[in-house]
Length: 265
Image (cartoon, rainbow, N blue to C red; front, side):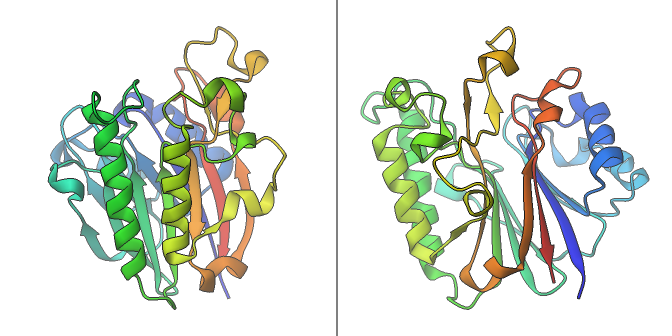
């Protein structure tokens, strides 16, 4: 039996934060890194840098300046696939097969803009449509699949996933309709919330802190926007989870902290 250490991280421009990536690798030594918001076209992705770090297996889906997801791995990646969600042509999903026949899905769900009204905000309408399409897709997955879903899903579903439930009820990422759609999505495949397994409610659990706070750690106005889910057949294989909050304080940081899990295979 082996072990895979996996990190998911909204890097907020991979080329701008290679120093942070190198620090992550030196300190935590993950086997697989799933990035969101890489903001780079495929032909400009810094593959040589990752190869020099020992990540010789790559699965990338990028576009110019926006979105973008990637899986960097020290273990072989098979059956690489990309899907165009909502027929938008956005790079928001990449799928690979890890050793142990584990299907890994790396997602970047639309943020949804500022106004939580789909009638006047096309970005929020897109987010809701994206979640509906993910729900239909989840329902079609084989019930006995060995699947892991990770990424920046841009929703903090529980009261303890945000710094103030009352103040964020009308703020995109914690509105009732988003939380309800995420719950429906999870039920469609009986997804298992790995982060909340290791840090049960009502303990606070965040992975994102706004750039707007002068001292993000002192203010601690966080949200849990990043997630790790598994299908039922894999939940007992998850042996640990940690939000790497120290990375949020590194030089020129992403506003997201990496989330790390360990999986036995």
